[in-house]
Picture 1 (cartoon, chains in turn orange, cyan):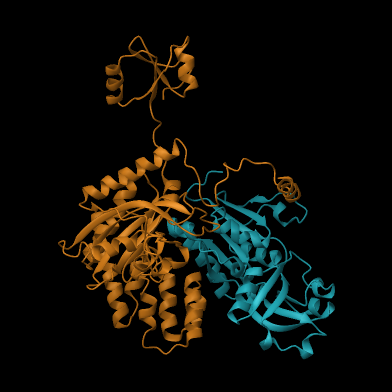
Picture 2 (cartoon, each protein chain N blue to C red; picture 1 turned 45 degrees about the horizontal axis):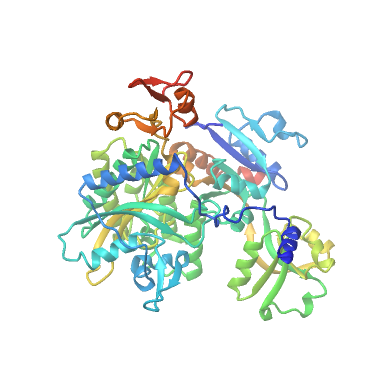
Length: 398
Length: 227
């Protein structure tokens, strides 16, 4: 006991309550934020379900082999692992829900009619946060359209993502369209050394058009021009159309243009940018992909795009996912909840009537002398006096 | 301060390259208030001829951090700083060509003649760049024990803190004066224009235009003649 105190003093830690501190990247979400996030999740969920996406709910933990197969392969370093005492096999806590959805579609729902539309929400856990994104636990919400790789499927998912963001109350967002496999398609058939390829990749990631043009000769010219083409949808499309591309790259570009046409026709006000060779964060995407940004949020709100689900049929799929930790930074706080203080002894029927009118009722558990003061103490903007709703004196309606 | 859609915060690095950098920024059309040129000014944030643009002057390492977190929209940082932090949210679209130097491994002149770097399995180095040093040695199969210092790196070997350092070298005069010789080259360094990823994506026209302005400046070769 003595020794423990001695160590504490020399390391200079102030005496803290050991039950208060949480591990890095984990936090208690309190009122009103907890309620706020739950509402946003439910608004997005209703939007998905209204569009015919049916909810699935995979477990929080599953065997490592299935969790990290296929699209989950890149999640290995981010995944918490633990041994299952029952089966003696290694299990992982999901760090991303998308691989679970792919697994469900490829196995238990393999006979369901295509296109299969499913959605999900749940918590994910990661081994490590980053300086920019310290959260290790957050909610994910998303939708997947499985069994179709047409530009109509891509457009449906992009438009759906936009509808969900608006349903959540986010106004100033923008969707950045990318083709993560385009750079490889431009470079194929060219015998570039592995070192040149690595430098090329790094220059592309930095958006350094001059270095890209210097590095790669003829394909470097094309990739450099693609980097310069990045920007708002109309401008980028015009520049891309002028490029003379090898066949596979041209097919990718034309697919992207068809998707943009569909999206712009359906939703002309949607802020859309194109960054053709961006591939940050697209570990498993195979076609048109996108990242969602918003003014006021530090990182990407979410991302999506085309991939293959693995398994025997290895069907094409497209989908999107939102990370609630960054998304919540872009959601304006909802209109304040209307809280009313209802003094002790009020009839239960009155309570239910108030609640059906949209009030949040705070019931007194004993008689108080001054209901107005009690209302203020409990954070209520209104009070029920003689069965009449009255604003608390001196307080703005709320 | 709340930002509107047209507002722009530009982060510039104090120290070694500030003069070259501020000349470049002036040519780009960003004219900071007179206090910016005054090295004794206590002010950290400066107004410019454009009421939407503010300039901040911070330590060179902090430029990347301010831009990565979106506190500044664009900035100018050495490639050394960008390599050290490797921030996901920072693009470095333009090589400005100024502040040219090298990042190297150096060791004491007594050690160098009989030392064979291919035989290293473990090194202890003093450096401002622990992440770069660790990555560099790891790629060569060498385990690096990095002692983080914030300045006067060249002093460390002569006082027995370690025998090797990883640091920036310009002419090599400082190395020589401290009895050190360069044994490995890690990277060539120049200053880069950097931009915050979200600023670029949510305001593509405004930020894209600044990238074009700096790119044109470099392509016109004006920076070379001035440096």
